[in-house]
Image (tube, rainbow, N blue to C red):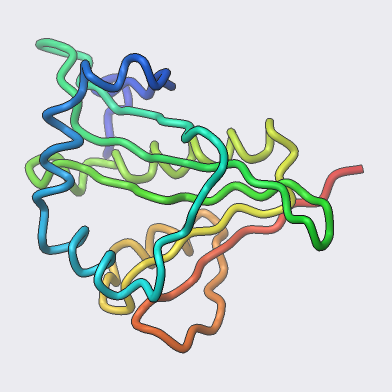
Length: 159
């Protein structure tokens, strides 16, 4: 059973990112996921908006950053709807399998709903079965993909 009191999810501002530089640097060095994903993308997406960052901190003995999710909110010009894109999700290896990824995905879904996004979407490597199981457990649906990536999304309807 997961003790959610052990971890705190906080939205941080871009000007706070320096406080968590070690976590972001570890993500950039994690070749098992990050490099494979970057190398498999045909072209890196370009976003005109600032990222939205949520970070997970341990609650005790100190507030140690152990994971983050980076989102972008975009508006589709073809159908004029808001879309939330999950660009990065990372949990330190020693903290995986503790529900932190779930907490981050839940924060992303809440953000998308609060932002009136019609869709939240992200990509995983086809061999990342743990991430796929997590996404499917909270309602994400897999879309067909012609690359090494699986595209997952949830669509929302608003009145």
